Amino acid sequence: MLEPKAHFSISVEALSAFRKASSVIIQETVARSLERKDELIQHGENSESLLTAGLEFTTRMLDAAMATGEIPLLEDELTWARERLPHEGVAPQHVLSRLRIYRDVVNEILAPEYAREVTQFLDWMISRQQDLI
Amino acid sequence: MTETTLEKEPLASLADQYLAALLRAQRQAASRMILDAVERGVDVKDIYLNVLQRTQYEIGRLWQTNRISVAEEHYCTACAQFVMTQLYPYIFRSERNGRRMVATCVGGELHEIGVRMVADFFEMEGWDTYYLGANTPARDILDTIAKREADIVGISVTIHYNLPQLLDLIAILKKSPDASTVKFLVGGRPFSLAPDLWQKTGADGSAAHAQEAVSLAAQWH
Image (tube, chains in turn green, cyan):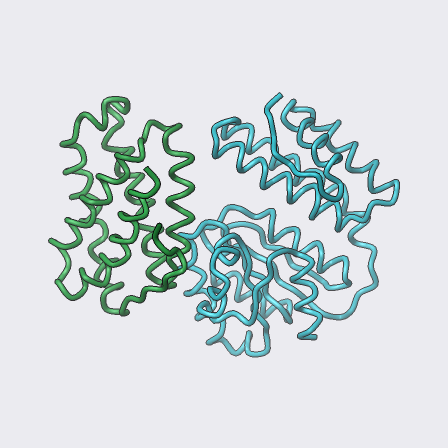
């Protein structure tokens, strides 16, 4: 199991670049997630709005963890989501696939040196989510 | 009745009964049992920590596990605030110590009961408290600090994603001459998960609960 006590850091420049690009990152992640129709059957016509809301939430949580360098915040969030989201029709596997898409989008949109700083946090989330499934 | 997991600790039986009444939507009965306990001599601080706070955590867990709805959670929380207001005759009776505290949630933070409890504990210790509640803009917090000549500012964050606002808020406040002698005390769920987090916010300290906050403030003053 991953160590939740790890402390990662991110430069001011990388965090700023992430914040500037976050709307586009969310939009692109939503668009790609919508293609995975088998994961969205239960949401029907609300799929796009629910995905957007969920990814905005994820982005804010990621931002807070990066701004403070505190992985335990992400641990807490993923554990909470594991408990809560299935009641809202979001399976743990869906969270994992969306985190992977999110990471791919970050790598495509941000400059490589900034993307690396952000994806260290995302990689931790992806590994932890795999543990939780 | 929804099964709960309140453990057997001080006032556990009262907490169980109080929660059960809330979940039956019996606000008056829930309130009455708390007031009866206080009238029998149970310390208000013990009620806050061992009944109200513990029950609020359990209510959060019940919602998270889908055993109660959002509406039920809001009802229970509103009841807790109602009970706390009814306890004010017991809270506002201490001799004043001449010190002042501003208590607030950071902008965007809607979970206010915790910092309200902290403010009430300070009030019971003789502090004059200015409780600003949820989602207070930075400008208004600074204005209140200046106007009330605060000695301590208690700032609460419950949802992790409000931490960047806290970082910005403390940075703004510490630049102001009006807050040059103020001590900043932070608290809320993120700080219980990451013990070193408070040091990264620019705050002077953090407390896990209201009694600890009062003890820390006593060391400062």
